[in-house]
Image (tube, rainbow, N blue to C red; front, side):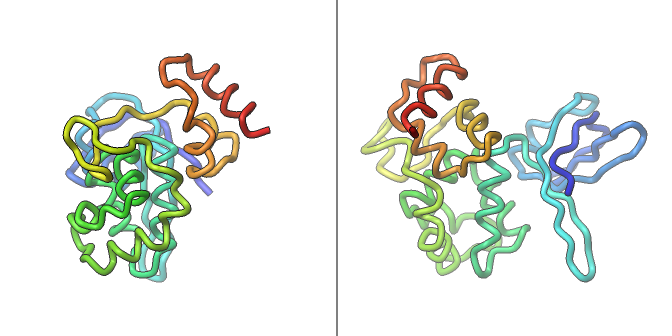
Length: 195
């Protein structure tokens, strides 16, 4: 399995990038958010998921490990294939999508291309307990519970997932750990809480 690809971005479209790795160009399907952030000639790392079907092989890429883990959870839901999962991840950053699932924000999830209300309901029912607790409670900047809010990607959660913990566990372990601490200290405290 290809865990990640690091190389120079030589082409990009709305939903894919071509990454040159020592003279070999890998076409990687990415969310619209990752495609927007990609810059031609920049070197970038994408965590990858290799999809093999009877008539196609496709490589899906994610700028963060948490986005890849969420993608892997999404494709376990009946009716959600890799393209629909990528469409859901294209709605916002991975943390806001995770929050939408955790708070059963069906209207947000159903905005994804090719995902109707019933499929969005199935996503929240199947994954709500697997994605961890929402990272915000009540209202934030006048957004009601479950509405996505701008957030930065969490290096501490990424580190915990790199150690083998699930997205839900990483979120739970970091729930009461102050976000203003250095990443290493946050990971240390999260692991201490776990034991």
